[in-house]
Length: 456
Ligand SMILES: [Zn+2]
Image 1 (cartoon, rainbow, N blue to C red):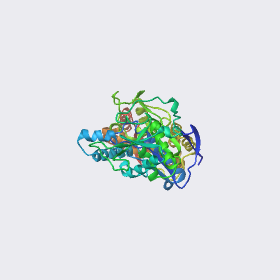
Image 2 (tube, helix red, strand yellow):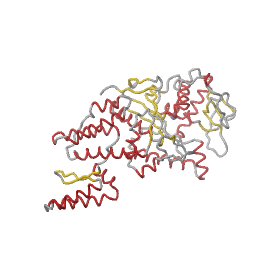
Image 3 (cartoon, rainbow, N blue to C red):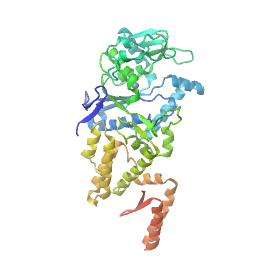
Image 4 (cartoon, rainbow, N blue to C red):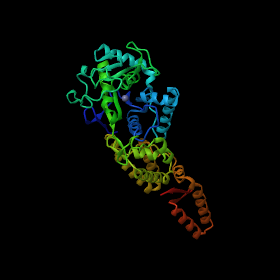
């Protein structure tokens, strides 16, 4: 297999990736704050990094890749939601963590090896904050414990943040006693009615940034190979994660920093105030998970992705074509094949999924025109390549039946009637039925094992 190249936002260069230990490749991706349904923009990182996970598993062996994605299960928004509903915090976090897992599974996302929850690691966070205080880069105030950005000369390596350019910023309510506006909370002092943990520096709860640093240290340890997330997290979240770990442990948090681009909705930023938020949960009621997944992979992960109705229609048609090719060779014997070199080369070149999808179509064309003796290889190559992208996971007949919805039964009986007409040599009737099916967008395939159909 060729070398894997990834764009490392720490160096802003596309670099050859090699893990520090090929027997233990480590990757961490910031996960959701579980207080409501995920919108389609939130689904981009789990899907993008799932492709990278699949590629790493293929390259280094599934048993040698450790992938962690956390759940933030303590946060202002979670507390607000629990209060609003008059339920316990755990009711909210359990409910939305479960929905997140179901929805990402429907998008074909493989479960990460480790899914730590912040509240399971509060003692690790407390220990880390104590180290930061001991090293003089964190200080106690009335409202909590803060990281002193001025005390860390190396702050800003990822985002190229510079103290001189920093605007004084808006003061966050409740954090008026910070020394500098850009200092960030490691620990928030307990407030009545809020969950809190005992700590040497006062009762309270962790800030968001320390969660990831502490969970990475506790569950993956050392400097990890890859840290990923949406580009919206690059500053300040990832910058703060880096500063905390470097100052507490004297080493880098991660060697490669990868960020996926924004997702816009019909060219607009998705936001609650604009009223244009599309939830994965709702989209899954209208579209197969594979359509959403392939649409999310249709742009290069670093580029913005414009989500439109036309993109979904187009992607559905694309999947019909891919499944149509698979259906044509489905009776060929199953064999093991590597994905072809051109397909792999596209993914190994900084996860170039648009190019990989184009190569997938080339494989579909090859399957569509393969002679009988070549069908097994064409099928295996198509499936191996699709498997790395996490699509074509279904039986093709099942795919088309599901796509036809309520018409599936009617199509089945028309196809059966046509088979009977042909058996009775009633060619006129067979042709009439075929025309009726064509008008419905259905193509019939007559094979040695009977007739199947597909949507065109
Ligand atoms: Zn994080």
